[in-house]
Image (cartoon, rainbow, N blue to C red; front, side):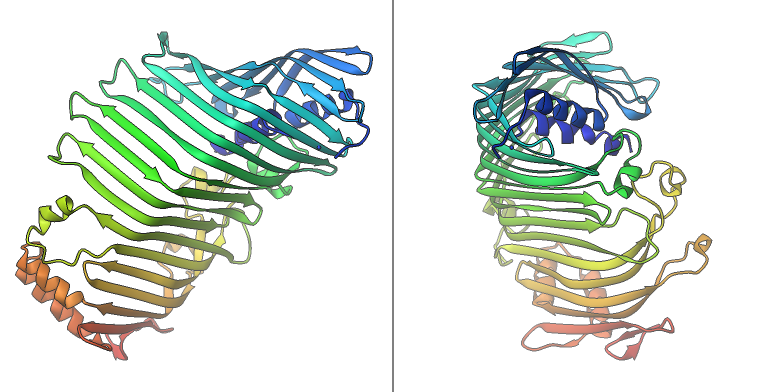
Amino acid sequence: MARLRSASLFLAIPATLVAQAAWADLTPAQVWGDWRQYMENMGYTVQAQEKAQGDDLTVTDVTMRMQMPEDGGAFSMSMGTLSFVQGADGAVEIRMPEVMPMTIDIAPEKPNDKPVSMVLNYAQTAPKMTASGTPEVLQYDYAAEQIALKLTGLKVGDESFGEDRAAFNLIGSGVSSRTEMKTGAMRSYTQTGRIDSLRYDVVMDAPDDPTALALKGGLEEITFDGGGDLPMLDATADMAAMMQAGMAFRGGLTAGAGNADVKVSDPENGDFGLLSTSAGAKLNISMGPDGLAYNGGQQDIAVDVTAAEMPFPITFSMAETGFDLKMPMMKSEEPQDFAFGLTLDQFKMSDMIWGIFDPTGQLPRDPARLVVDLTGKAKVLFDMVDPESPANKESKDPGELHALTVNKFALDVAGAAFDASGDFTFKNAEDQTLQKMPQPIGALNLSLVGGIALMEKLVTLGLLPQEQALGARMMIGLFTVPGEGEDALKSKIEFTEDGSILANGQQIK
């Protein structure tokens, strides 16, 4: 729960470092006041010295601090000197230092854990930010030739790490964004932005662990847009209270070509390497009183893996991957919608991998596909974001399943195609202390094409024992009927109100 409540840290930084306002009369004091109010509303303690110079305002020794919940540590950031310069057109230019240090102290969670302290520098090249509009509707426009986040110090316990053992470098080029802030009973914001190119370089080599990690990669043409509503409450106090007061946010990100190079040095178990590329990616997330929604995917993925245990590289590719997750998070007397989806399309393996278990090429090597699309309704019994809820403190079931629809479940592999769809409602026990499984009522439609031929080939290859294949044939005969075409089977499994189970009209329970 500490992680959820400290989400304010990540909501606040983008709005202040890569933010943006419509031309109107606006004073430097009003812009700085909006910044300070926003940061304090997000749970930060802000310290600064203010000095007016005519129409302009200089704010020196700016620091922001936040104590993490549950003794989780602390975050602090020094922004140095900020200058708010009145423009002739009514806008305000915000001049920031090119380097701003951040300090993160992480307290140990267990008695044997060591405290961790790190210092990162946030740097900007040729930054330009202007604010315009009115105090009630502020628009911030930001641009920089380059931004960078670099780890400059890491200490674990009493030991300090140099760049050869701990490094983190993140560099973005061609950065621009626009943010509009509206204040009232709630603080609402919308934001759009772009980064032409993003590069990262990470090294981790702990002295008490023989394993070392090196990671490099990048993304091109990143765009993002999002927004949210923030109630005027202390963000560190209670995420459940924030959600109940109307807190909500959404964000979407798209990216072009990407690549990653992972190297793991492990003297005990052998080295490991991974190279990956993709043609594009997307990610969307939203969270609010209606629940959490999370979906995304990648296109044209290619992966090469080398491992000490493998005599040759493992190579595979996919035309598309995707996922979709939607779940309620707040207690409700009525069932709420949920969803789960997964797509792995056009999965291909190299012939070298196929040759391990099919050296004679008996199995069709067509691209494989997996599609899962589930929706339903569930009643949430406790606020999921409340650390004091029985579900979080006593490991009780957080909800009840009331309905499930299998919109699609499809698996195509090695010449066989399996499909399923169905619709169910569920009876839940009236006494929740019984911990009984909910009783399904509904039907599931199944089909299998090419399954018998695949099973015979697996027996021939020695991958499936003959006795297991005979048992599978018997089960198939009991639960299926012929479908349309050669080697096609289908089945309808029904779950009735009285608890009976039918297969193609024949009672099996």
